[in-house]
Length: 419
Image 1 (cartoon, rainbow, N blue to C red):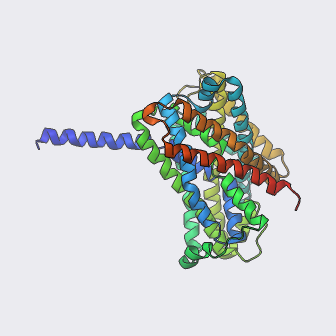
Image 2: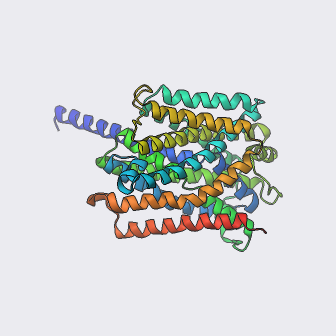
Image 3: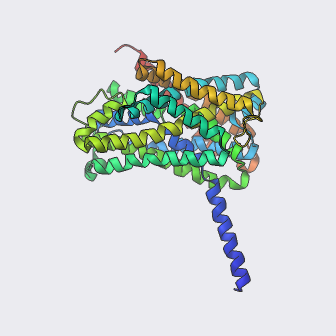
């Protein structure tokens, strides 16, 4: 091979690597945001109450998460439209309003949870919520208003990287590999109501309505097209594995250190830190939770607010790109600002954050079938032939819709019917 040909080949390889790295982002961001403060509390409660029994569920949910979120990649890359816009143009403005309404309910609960997580982290170092919550809100506003799509994405991925702290915590807990591998299969208490409630909670925390709106909007805003679908699928698949591994790590930490110690009332981040202190050490437990939860909560707050902003702007036909400055897209940035401020204000004004978050999560699980149903309907009717749903994919999508519908109804039944 001549020197000229070798140089050309090297340039093509560098260009191919740069293209691959450029595509990475929407899937990883939305998946890491899925492991938010509420999900962390759910995983911690699962391990503390039932040991390793729910660990297989965390791993079995990986394909469920991928099946749903991969459809947003295909829809965004082939149509160039966000989720709300696609619904409005395919099914009409009333159906778009219904889908956006479910998103806003979900986003409200998520933002309460994220800012509550920030407040709890501040408590570790003696800072009052009146300081940490406004600072977090100001940070989220500054990130979006002063950046482009790519800059926002890079900051989001950096925040998500702090969730690695939970993997470190799992190692520090020194779990017995044999117990981790064998005990989940020894006995599944399927007749226990508390156990089934946590099964439903973990299932309901896997796919949030705002995730669907965010990833499709991010694919469009980033400018991904059909030729990049394969790489975008890899991005989504890696993210799906990573987020459930983080959930599994949190479960392993509490299962190893707290299971069997009557810690069945873990309902807040502060309680988790206090419970782990005797086993990991006060400094290690606080640092682990502070890093992991702060990164997860800030990233989720960013993703949730952007999902709501994209969706409302799409439904109204307004400009909605992070590559536009606020003067060119005032409505989009205005919605984002309102979301952040309202979420922060509700946390500062509330006296029962956990109860509010749990109530909204229950409603969120009930509303999820509506959002997933719209997603499957769009995929079924609008994807072009090279990317249309094959028979196996249609069956998988139908099973996922049935699963989330069953989970939503089951969660409501388990929670609301008197014992």
